[in-house]
Length: 419
Ligand code: UD1
Image (cartoon, rainbow, N blue to C red; front, side, top):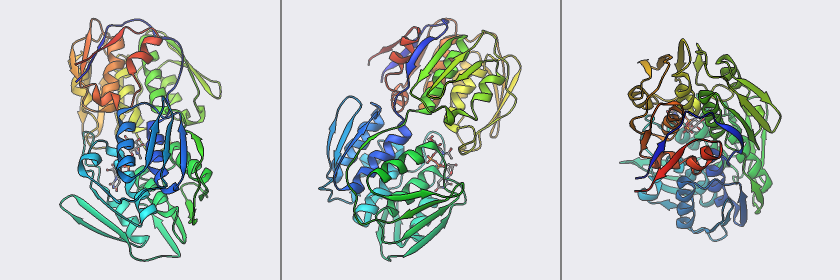
């Protein structure tokens, strides 16, 4: 597996265009299965997870052409409703194909995703919702078989938690149904809005009512379209933490700054200056960050769990004690032991992380244990004295398009060692 070597202590300075969103493009690629025509998806990030989604699409019978940041999917000939375990395991978000295959074929067979590096990640909310929608579900030894047995003219689903994955699966499974499906307490992440915008471009009738309610009026047929995926707000946040920790000055282009409303105050409390310029965000920081006392990860519009690790890396050198409470995933502190190896002072008590700011971090050998935890190590490496060697870069490649090139453009000294 490749490693990254970060040799920095230079402020990150410059301007950069943020890549397309992974968490939008993967459900949108899955959604093309419903269309039965040709969709051209622009601004698709070039990631290993994108390749995994393409492999599943091809297995299902789609013709897929991959350009630099455009993926063209012709789903006219989809004929398959099962996805082998080997393909499902290539990426966690493969569970979103459950909804799209059900929507298109009326049945699906695939392996359950199971736990991963950041937590148990059950799918009970997805399956309970599908039962309400008239699907029969059989589960045995990690395998799920799902089939439509009842055509409901109306299904009302109230999620006990606004799960992103469950909301996506319900929308996909309902888009071509005969009736109306209503989801209460649905996820409100911008990526859900992006998926719905894509589906509506293809002829779906999906609307958002009061906060957290989604209404899906089933339609008979869809048509292809061209769609541009939104930019990746978590990648943008990672650049922001890099600028903050190095005392840099970075302008991010191509983003929707409305998505950053609840995270900007965190950077401001840490002593950074953030300028909101609609589709651009400029962040400037002097050396000498301040601790932030109370960060709680929550469903959108709360502070995103995906930003927890990079923000923690930034706060390892903020003066005072910062507190982060991880409310979404139970094992999302795996990066802590690696940050501690670099000299950070962090204590974990259940879902609470107490970060005592230190003056220095020191480069050493560390290992990425998951996607965002790996990005956090890059951020810490930008500040550390000496060389930081980060192993298991494959985790980072799942979500960041050539992370070394992006940071190099902003002045970082970072390179990849191929193995
Ligand atoms: C979650 C994040 C999303 C992030 C993604 C990748 C939230 C609300 N969701 O989406 O922002 O981009 O991870 O890191 O922040 N749960 C159940 N049963 C279910 C489904 C979920 O108990 O059927 C629990 C999960 O264990 C977890 C929480 O609900 O504790 C959030 O799950 P969900 O939003 O579904 O996860 P993802 O879709 O992976």
